[in-house]
Length: 202
Image (cartoon, rainbow, N blue to C red; front, side):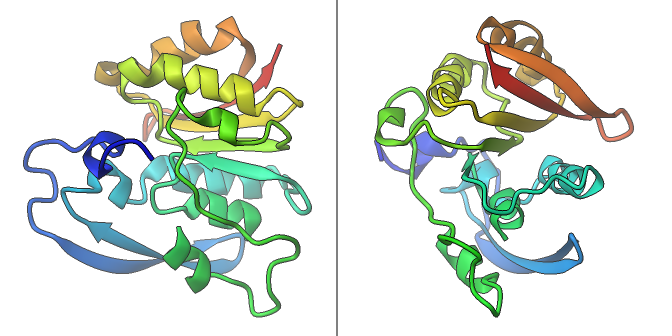
């Protein structure tokens, strides 16, 4: 990991000035998933379960996407909800381990600095997932490099984003990601301004 948490988790001035934590339970795929959220300035935006993560989990359920037995990596895991649901964050993984154990190797948590140390990670994934990770335009080239590396062996990417104009998300999906990937908008929720995209390396 390069630098401290402030370099990895961008924080706005005044965001989470008071430190507190909470455990929230989400009902996903008929399961109760308990997520510990530790709100503090050091974690900034990574402390919260964002609506796009819930939408991505719901999308998997609605599409009956069978993720069992697949190799999955979640980028920008934050609280880890999408990765936990996909595989079924140390504290959140331990709190959500099925009584019968994980069907294969259990989830693990590891820091990955986009564009800088992705070579430490395999390219043999089936799925690369991310929720609300497209919001800092200066990181878009690093994210693209990382996605290309992780998808070299044919992984399918699913990214859910709140389409905030001020964060340039639409530009990323319309112009940057298509430079290397075939991109498909698979779900649009205009009420919440959340889109889900599927991408495969060309």
